[in-house]
Image (cartoon, rainbow, N blue to C red; front, top):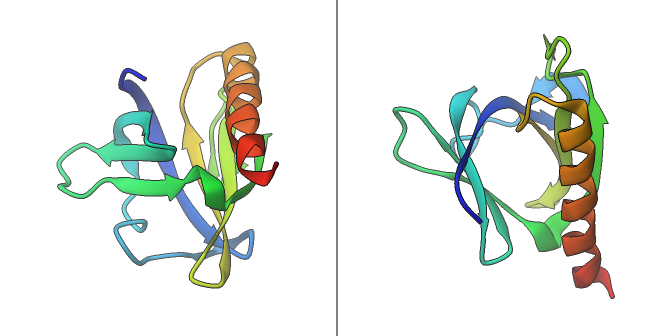
Length: 119
């Protein structure tokens, strides 16, 4: 998949907006590029060396919303990866497209890929 521009809005602990996961580079919010490679969702933030990595096999659900981690996305939709890491339930939010329709299509495509791990 080719790299596309997006915005990382943070990672919540236990889906509580006021509790943030801060390890492994997940603390710094910001713009960057995203892609899927080897069944891993990758996000490379501008000016940082390490990519954020979310293995699709660990994703339990994908949700759409208008805000995440205390930040509003305005008219754009936030794609939220609900996943497990080191015994914690995390929710990582990204704005990956400007269009609500494109966000819904992207969610469906990611859900198809994730379902392949549970079958």
